[in-house]
Amino acid sequence: MGKTTKLILFLVFLVLAVLAMLFLWVEKIENNTESINVKVPNVNTLEKQIDLDLSNSKIDFREKGNLVKNNPGMEIGTWYLVYEKPGESALNKKLIFSSESKCAYEAVTKLCYETQMVKGDRVFVAGATEENGINVRTIIIEKRSE
Image (cartoon, rainbow, N blue to C red; front, side):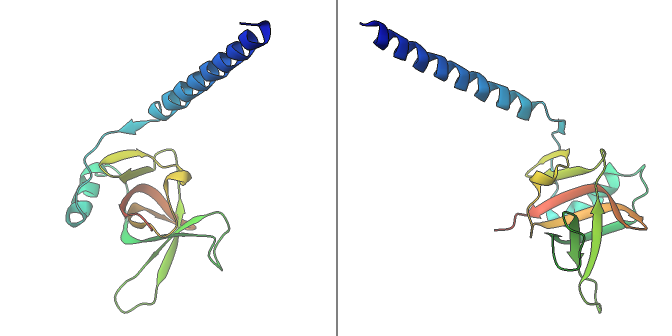
């Protein structure tokens, strides 16, 4: 083998090694996110689970609805819950996230990150009502938007 062939093989090996290390690094970051493995209850027992998880918190808002973002008349870049109450037209509440906000989907509960949520997701939200919206304690994603 000539010097050029050896150099090309070395560079290919180096690129593959860097890609493998990058893959392992990304996987490690994903596994290091704070998560608590919790069984998410079915839709019929959501409120009971929220009561158990949040018994020491001031939770006065519990509603099912859909997530929306960047809709007309709403603050740009902010998540809202659109929900209904009997005899009223569609209601919406601004969602305020903190370091204590948890999101649950497919039997896993993690800290909420905006990238986990999708516009149109069907969710159950529990939190504390504030002047400018709902301080989210827990969001349980019941059904992903298609």
